Length: 216
Image (cartoon, rainbow, N blue to C red; front, side, top):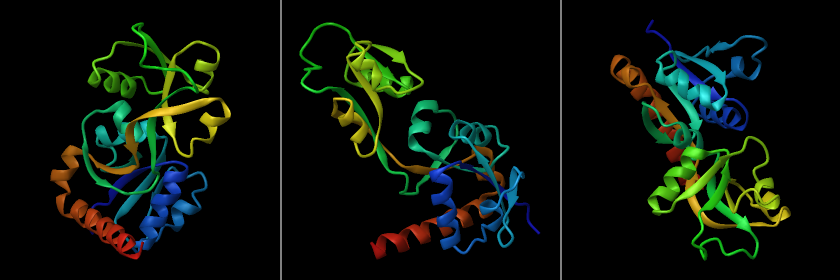
């Protein structure tokens, strides 16, 4: 029997959506749904092992080759970068990066250097570099919406889904930074070493995603 591929799945909602996709593809995901204390889960009817990890670790495991594939949000990819193949937009986990400011403020009508708070400093830096703007970026770990309220920053760059949290805190999105969704990534060496197996898995994913698009 051929060697199992190993895939790292982002814990939480992306894990649930990934499992739903796999089951629709005909893969038995019962070990992942009842993981117990096990950290690596072998699928009974397909040569695949699943590892459940936090999003930044998914990229680390794939980049270093201990996992052949991974499913992770585009937000993490944009922030961390690194070296791997991004092969498929899986279409779930959709949201967006947006620049948001206090309602009523004119962010662009000033010559002063703006201060931007974000959990994603690299995404923020690239966005403003492309606009040719100099900004001071302040890394925030918790509720980034507090920064403009407390006068720490002129605006924020953050993930926006419904916009409800922004509205509740008197903030409005004024510009989209990037679209985000779950992506399938592949280790560069694995793509060569396990080409047939990986292409089979990608093909199964693509077929199910196409079926969903046709049913929508």
